[in-house]
Image (cartoon, rainbow, N blue to C red; front, side, top):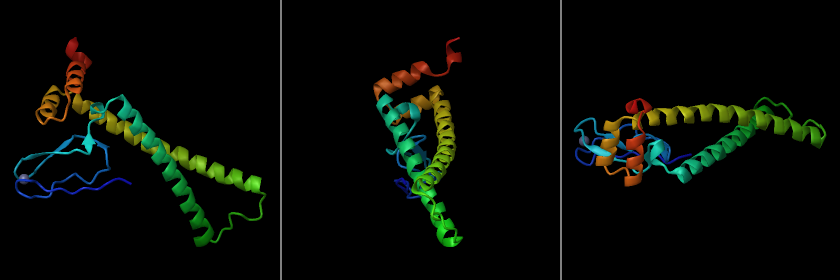
Length: 166
Ligand SMILES: [Zn+2]
């Protein structure tokens, strides 16, 4: 899953770190070269609140879809392991109905576990992203790098931390 990129600094050709992330990951949309300090803009990474409502919804849909694929894939792997490595016959003459229930149950449990782990990870990444975009200096930096359109800039600038208004 995901596209892996490895880009080098346009100035000094040093390989930029922290780029091996999923396509459309949540994070700072730029990376700083450790050697010369050049800021390189990334098009495949953005902060959560840089996405509009449609993109947020789409992101969550893809997240759920990925959970679904992972859980199916996980179940198939476990099934193959049981059957061919451990030699346990899964379909041991049970009725189709009972067999179906077992498979469905196993998949459901896997889906819940996979969803729970991945969703907690997503919530953590969104929280970290929100924390970054609550910093007005960070917003200005994003704006200078032309990462924000005017609407997003205004939104982020005026939202920030609730404590600022008190
Ligand atoms: Zn550099």
